[in-house]
Image (cartoon, rainbow, N blue to C red; front, side):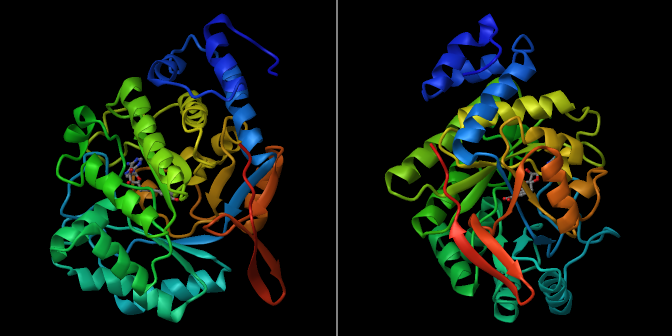
Length: 383
Ligand code: V47
């Protein structure tokens, strides 16, 4: 039972307390400033604690963006480059191996791999990124590619999404990232990234990944030109795929990550970045709408450490990882540090009143001692 109660929130609160699903109108209403943020947060926290108790998860991970050269020109992206730009790069095998070694030496359990779509790099070049790391560092879980990349590989090779995913799994792919989702509704998608994979290809990629036994994450890029209606429509589409996946016994989406737009150095630099209250509201609404996704990530790199800590009481139960070599947000003006030590990330979680749990990419506990790390039990998630 919640302590506070405003009239506007009462019908929604009753649904949440009864474990009933919220609809599109409920979600849009929650974006009204008339809905008090603390009370909304309290409601999201109820669901968060039902599902994940007092735990807050993190992992030890490293990022790798093999190239920033990209055929697409998404208006929100500061990371992409043209081939001849001074900042354009494509990593050599030696650089990729050095990153793998750095990751393993730092105790990473995961490598997060996404990048640009380089018009001169063949599919084999991307496959080689995965196989090179997998063969040399088999303990690293490779969480790689967004559906935008999978769609591009399918077009490059003339093969199906299923073929690409199976071939990448043979190379060592462990799971898929949640990127490239942006906003699914064509009223927005056609304005910010009209050329890349549309929503049907995005969903086909995740649906197929789940069928093949891969887990994946999902995201939403908010705080640019979209309206509350587009955000809720986006969340409901994700919820529907997860329903279908659960019906088949998969439940492939593990975590949802709301991504706050960072405008610096982008084609939308005139837009003011979302405020802290908007970040918290979006986290809370996401937790309430996505009743079938077990985890919500407060990506500290993007939110800032302080807001990520507060978000752990507004629906989030995961803070992502220690992270090293993040470029997408830092190119777009993020002022967060480049890496957090394990000691620091645990302190960040404890200061927020939560119990830190190191997880691997698939949400199993990680146990460490002097001899190294091993995977323990799967983390149980409540209703
Ligand atoms: O797809 C790009 C977004 C995504 C900007 O799966 C931007 O665990 C804000 O998906 N401002 C890539 N957002 C990052 C991503 C991600 C991050 C952390 C964890 C996981 C996971 C996935 O970042 C892109 C796009 O939606 N993005 N540029 C920007 N200027």
